[in-house]
Image 1 (tube, rainbow, N blue to C red):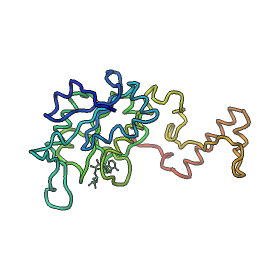
Image 2: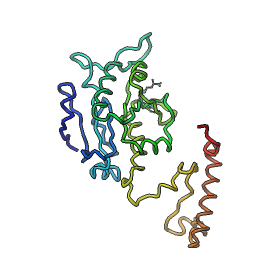
Image 3: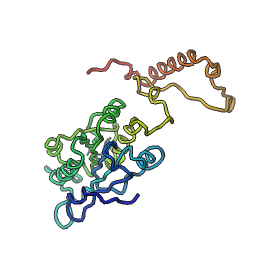
Image 4: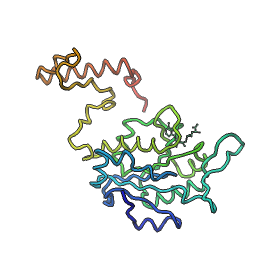
Length: 257
Ligand SMILES: C[S@@+](CC[C@H](N)C(=O)[O-])C[C@H]1O[C@@H](n2cnc3c(N)ncnc32)[C@H](O)[C@@H]1O
């Protein structure tokens, strides 16, 4: 999608451009701003299918802030060697702070998330909470991550998408945005029933079947052909509990508030 120049472009350092995707100029749109060294990675998969249609329809908007534009010196350096020595490079706090401050000028009320393997695990309830808000500003790290001081100084919320290490935060940002977008009214249309999905109500979803009625000798459960909606609901609930007990007993434990 083409870059649509906005008045916000003027606030960036010379040579930098804040890129907006879709028709998201409406102030009611759920607003996503991604701070990244690789703005060209966006919208990526988010520009396809239902989330892509919702972007075009203006249900959400996407801005990318190119971190490189805030880099230091002729080479626009964004990283430096770790204090105390060691392998790899660390993203500079002054560079990250400048990019965050820029994002806050246009999206002041959105929480600023730093995607980080050390962060709080991203969950469905977090997605619901974010989806109810004005949008998200997401900082995608690279190298060994970002200088610790900027996390504190700019009140960044660290969020992890799982117990593994990615090369960069861009894919993690897309995961978070996708999970939130599905919960924005109108994004999915009638395509899905959100209430019965995994993690809604603290259970995994029951097994799903479709046609043909028998495939490779395997029939669909009789109850699903019965037309008795109460019986079907009871069966599905029992299957949800069975699967959750087998696979994710941790979900059944009472949560500490
Ligand atoms: C190579 S990783 C840095 C890992 C860091 N040195 C550590 O051990 O915690 C580079 C960037 O990828 C992103 N990242 C990696 N794994 C992630 C995860 N599980 N969840 C969210 N972001 C992740 C973060 O933005 C991070 O700054």
